[in-house]
Length: 269
Image (cartoon, rainbow, N blue to C red; front, side, top):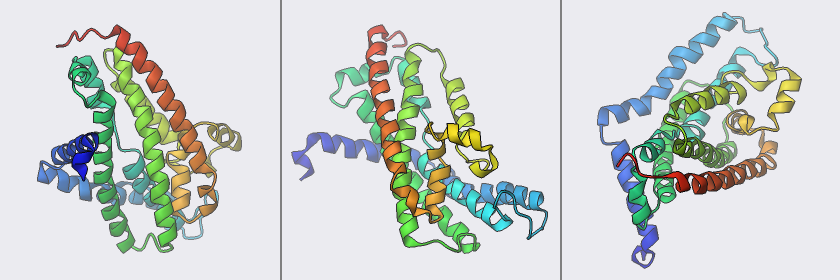
């Protein structure tokens, strides 16, 4: 049946190759699987344990110690599913002139990197599932329901598309920039602080939160976390906003690509 859709076969083969590349080194893959849980326990759990200092009655903007740990545990899961993709390979392809290959082959530049992104998402979904099970065994996800889990994953997959579009944009800016790693680092720092990944947005001034709600940042971490925590009312409106931002980034990417190709000379070949 797949042979009747040759382009689909190219997508499947590219996804398989990308998966094999990402899991080629078993020890690295093992660290990818257990690493997130270890980072959560040794850094975030101990950090907030020191801040609360055993005071079970201490409440910070509505967050007890247990609620804060629950929030950051979901923050880790959301980061794995929705915000793990980086565009460094994409930028290198442009800077080193390797995109000439995609211009003559039937599987173009966008298709190849999108297929690689899909493969990456399969891997991250597996790692996130292992992380959820590990944290669940610690009793942190005590109120987890199947419905909130499914809605959370669906929402995170939408967020990952927006994040991919944003990362794709930073990558194709290599048509004009010698290095784009600074942009990627700045984007990571901004998203970490403004998305609620480091601190819940309830700890921010109200006027700051109102401004952030007009940006894509809260939808990268804060809203997915709340959906995982069972606030399913957000699942009705937030996905539309995510789709809107994704369309905007996709249109910008198309414009940047068309402008960049007019400047491309394959100097690195």
